[in-house]
Length: 194
Image (cartoon, rainbow, N blue to C red):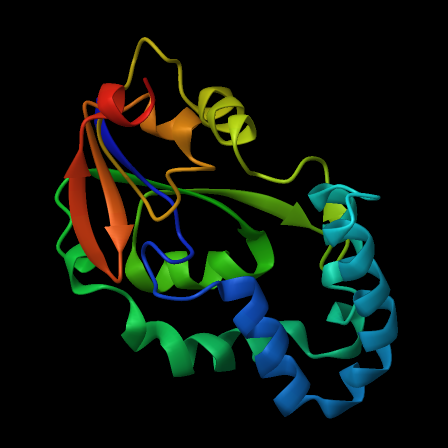
């Protein structure tokens, strides 16, 4: 089966959905400000390399128990769905979106856009804490091959804004597209990563 792989944040949409959702919740549910000190400390620890990104994500969404999650997610996508890049809406092959963003946030946009498969970071809908590994780098490929037998799929196109972090998924594609300011720029994998 021929498939295309898409990163989500700054690829399918021009923003980081997790960060923007956090801001959306601060505005619409202002009492979530009480978790800011914990998030601030976690951010400093992550920047200093004291904790890794997966550990950081254990506290990044600790505001989730304080909000009506389903209502917040729908409100967020009601506001931002129109920012999905037009070229993504015109896709023709079986589409797999692989993202580090939370499942509770991306499952709604998957329903709205109708792409076939979503692979993303799992979070507790009760606590907001990450469950398992952050879906980033090599983890994206591991998670893909948990769902699909590598001999039964052929990756045609891979799209991502991050040449730095998405080498593992780019390595799977026949064609690689770097997304810059919403535009697709085809590149030769061997020239970029030699």
